[in-house]
Figure: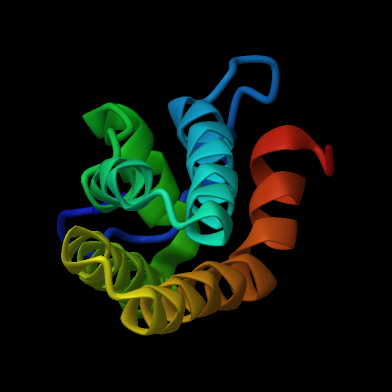
Length: 139
């Protein structure tokens, strides 16, 4: 899961983010994007071993360091449940995609991938813009 832990109070001015420091989550998201493209390519070519490999990587992606998770949770605040829910949905769908690929079940793989994309899209629509504005000054 991208974010784990308890709800934290919203960050105050003393906890203002360092917008110059790169975040591990940015690299994780970039790598997940590459894996999503790999899954699309693998499904299109019916390369089930490749799909199973990238789906497992998506399901078990690296986590940001604890201090960064705490910053993210503090920012997300009352919406932590939604944020974590999207991550759980993506994890579950990626696992379903991996299993479908192992069975070489194209129909199930496409359905699981659609669920995975839906979880990503939902999270991005709700959180990406405010996250970028807060942590990266809108970049």
